[in-house]
Image (cartoon, rainbow over the protein chains, first blue to last red):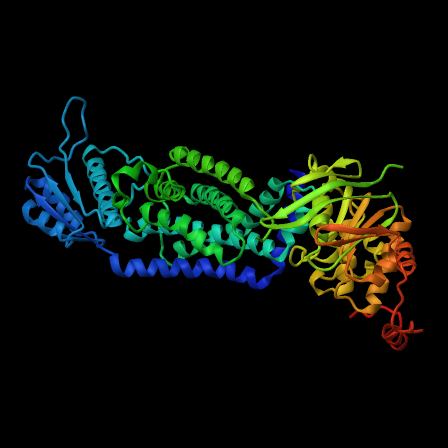
Length: 364
Length: 252
């Protein structure tokens, strides 16, 4: 441990002296965030939703009127039959059917609660998720209004019309997760492979240093840089996109850093057998691309074949994004996302063991 | 005293190429031992096996009393190495570089004293990548001495240095020998071997073809009736060069 800390101190000192590298390590996440954010906002900023109001009573009108007033939603009233046709042609993101027995009242034991039926377009998972979130929030607050109970979450003063959840609020945790993965994996993998090519690792491995100490020191060094990068990513999200983090910044940062450590160990593992810097992007894509597609950031998790879905739900990026999103959007606490955190930690330990096993210092 | 390096029937092959073909030799404590040979003769492979950096295919080797095959990290703790084609971590000063390697051995050392012993004290706070070739080789030797090694391995230490820097390094190597450290060096330069080494082994295609003190090898050759076709010059071009430019080290 003492050895790790000493090596870490010296590696970090060397790293921060490279002002150019330092500058770009902070500018790149800024760029990524802005590009990802604007690209996605421009195209998919609104959720188009159809409502089939089969109740047509006071409560259902109230719900529909409120939903109409929310600018994130592009709302139309259609029959279920028509809407399903549109949904299949992906002209709609989702359909909500209000049942004829719809009332707004708190649930009582033994009494059935009216069920809203929601159909979603699998190809547009974010839009569907945002729509669901908004409807759930509106109904929650309507119920609070009826029962006069205080909301559990501290949004008492906000009117129902002021539902703050926008598309970007849902998108940003995912972008944060993807960027953490990319930046962490690439930074440490390139650093290690460059050291291998220049013969630095050879020279170091001619001493009795432990591979675990050396790799841990590299992970710690990059973690400091990555913490700065996470700060930039969050700053952009808060300042430029005005994102609401319901669960608070603290838990979000904790999970983001755990995710960073995990991705750094993945970077170490893939640098193990790489013999030139040119191999790094190729190997990295092999690891990051499937996660990119299957983690539900930009594409539906359901796009994956049924057989491998249990696996995709356990991928590092899926766990990271789920945890980030639950904190950011649903106001989850660290304790609420403990299963995801546990998963991330298991991956981290596994990644580190693999990294130590695969470590080679020769460039051939 | 038992030999400090003992090698028996050492073998190593890369695919079809037999790089080392069953060599045996030993190194006495306190001597400067030279391993000579043309490129591709198997010198570096042999040295890297002894340093615990590479696995052999057969035979046995002990360094400083430790079996290289069984306990490579025990060997690494007892030796110092300077490698060909290696580099130091980025953006550290000379002093921090020494500290980095001390940390690799989990030791705390007097960095300035070590740098002084290789005449680099005044460069202690200079970035290591800004040092001249000769200075970098001396820093490299300083990093190899952090653990007070019993054997110092130097792989072609003077390649690429100017004549002044070479002579300066020779003095340093003799100085290290004078402090009781065994030095195991490989080189292309035969004048270097002749001046520095107590004994030399000459390698050719994976075999050791001769092993003796340089003087004895020369005498044996003469005894076999060898004579140089041209008369020995009383001075050569290097003497001219040093006469004109002096023995003083040139360092920017």
